[in-house]
Image (tube, rainbow, N blue to C red):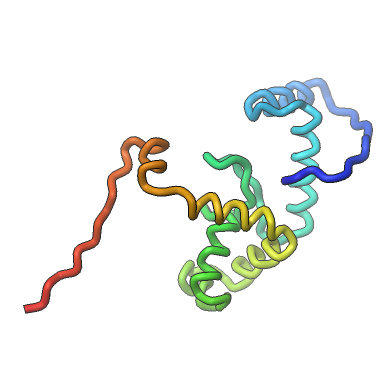
Length: 147
């Protein structure tokens, strides 16, 4: 989430919430102010978009679809491969069309965020992946020969 213009708001937290916020900020290398701004923004987005949640990943915090393992950009990758056919993507994922549409709706409002994640994915080759996941093995499909 990119910061644009900002405003200063005062907020009162319980001591325990303040400690938890500081721990989260430290874990991510953020200031407590940055962490609270991010959490507020994510909360606003959750309230504005059905089925949207946010999770930590190897690539940072990402918008995901609730009750799934998929980030919004991954669903948009499928939507693109199905040439925008939302019902076909829903069938592929065995989801309701509403969940796929939720990802599309989010991506339409935050296209730069989704484009950046897709671009990062496209620039990752197997050697890069293998450095991050040493246990990875490359699967090479062989087409059976016909007699």
